Image (cartoon, rainbow, N blue to C red; front, top):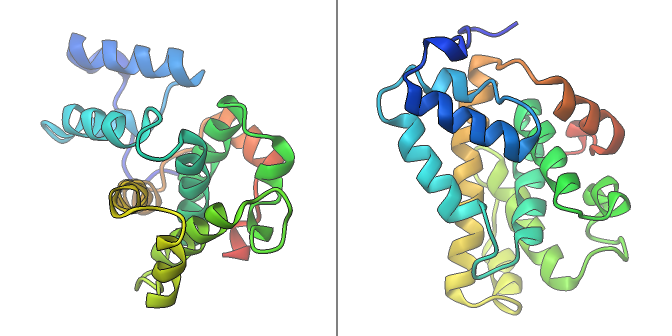
Length: 192
């Protein structure tokens, strides 16, 4: 049960309603967290721009790496809402189902490259509080990514740090479609 109710879509200004409809078309469901973001003036607009800049497309690293990093970060943080969304998004983006299912075996699974392993290791450590990344983790990451790419990977981790804290703290209700995808493909959050 959510700690703060989502606002009804109809109660939002027209611009917010339009943003929510665009998100719904893109994701296939209406995100409940967006209906609580609307309670804070400027948050939805700012977060929309930030999310698109960091996560909406390939950048310095591929969207696949970004999506895998977001799954590990949200799982390590213990946010089932974001874990369901990131698994659902990875599936919608066409990431192999077996790879999604094997994400917590990234260290040994043949589905993952050494570069992905390095990124996921940092994402797992950064998803914990306090952060558990080591200098050795970053030295391995630097073998595969330049400093700008590493900053982009960390931006994904940081974005989901906000989303994880927001949704876990407010106990945001998980929508049926992401929840079904999590049950089908999701890693065990307790593996974190």
